[in-house]
Image 1 (cartoon, one colour):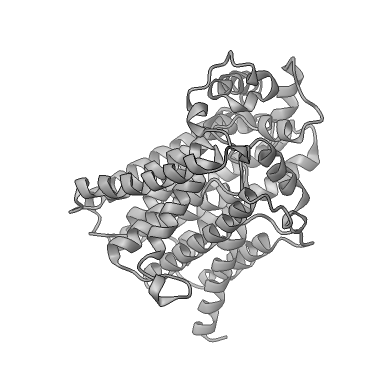
Image 2 (cartoon, helix red, strand yellow):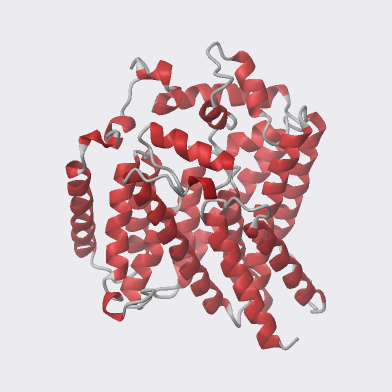
Length: 428
């Protein structure tokens, strides 16, 4: 097999794995995203197995140790099937680190990252199309989505909170990068090329407001201002004016949207009070309800400090101590199956070793990114990846971290960034 054909296969698999990881899982007997990820990993390992490259730095070693520590949590597992399914998802996401690290060599790095950008925006467009169907009341596509995910979508629609992906807003730094670089990435019509990023930016803020998810508003604002503040020689006044223009359009559409649409005002959810009667019928709807999850997560983690309770076992311990557990509510199960925090999830599932290692990794990431941002070149692709990654971390502090999309993006982006570091260390 020629090197050209081999590289094209790798690019196709990378593109496929990213798109199918980000869109809702299709109701197929096989999962295209997982197959693409495993094939991609095997091909990359085979390619690198014959190369003399034994440069394993501290970050890679800690990442490997982290995997083994997370695996040991099987010791206290009560229900083996949920553990195996969650562990399988974790492995799929975890492989993303080594895919990003080994795939993104110095020769093809910019091309690989640009393909990643295009795949990310394309999958965002698909998710946007599905959300627009939600808002129009058309649910004809649900039979084509895996049953458990379709049930979760339907449950959130009934609460007036359309849900497909929490990471669509991470397209914002990519779109801004394209605008700054004057890149033309419109999918079909040439006359829309310049307008395409602006249209998508406006669409994202409108859907974020209509979705009634706080985190989507936070991620949009974080990504928008972070990229502009980090890139040099950008007019801050102009940046604020552009943002206000986009935001005003979004708010205008939000206000004009029919009240009968069952969409609640997201602003009210930022300041909800625990005494609101709604807390009884929907305890997940309050910001302060997170304190219940935090307290219980600490209790469970301290009860199993060495190995934790294992993947997907927090709910087993949570609902037993809850006076108003809802055993037959799939949404309640979904919400309370996780502490909604990356650090606490590792503490609950893997004890103090898991908590220490994920904290150490985040510290290393923060240190590396700080050094990178002090010395990056103008309009470096790396700054877009850094903004995306810390947007994911912000999400992980208040939401579940066991989805395939979260895990793969978290580790894949970190692998891409680690490839920069590895290349630098080789030249020293």
